[in-house]
Image 1 (tube, helix red, strand yellow):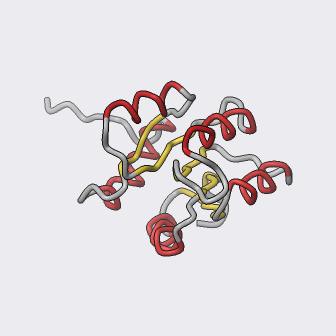
Image 2: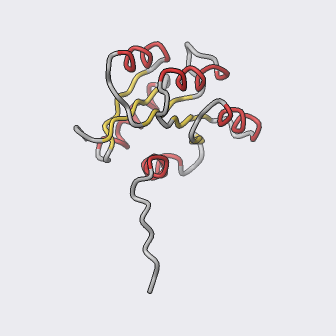
Image 3: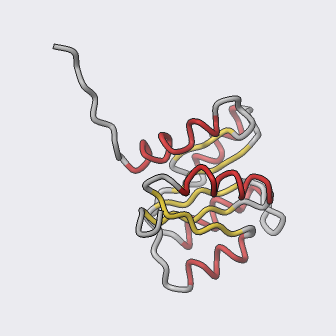
Length: 133
């Protein structure tokens, strides 16, 4: 959606970039999608302000141990959601310790359906709960 909430999506897999674009194009988000840490660095240095960063943990030009740390240094205060297929608890704890706000597990059967609601939750949007009277 043009004029929506600007988010930076960093994903090196062409298929997943396309899928994320399709999922978010009719949402409240305006996704700026890049394929590498190098491209993400240029996007952030170019003066664009993002409300959220959705970043693959394993990029061709950034080892997993540095991806979130690098993003955190460039985007102080911006929520970062790490996308990964690694489901072990140790990796998840490490990623959160590096400064990720949340983790989205790619490959889970419902991750595509849960993407937009998860981003809403991270940003605190659309979380009103109706309590039956």
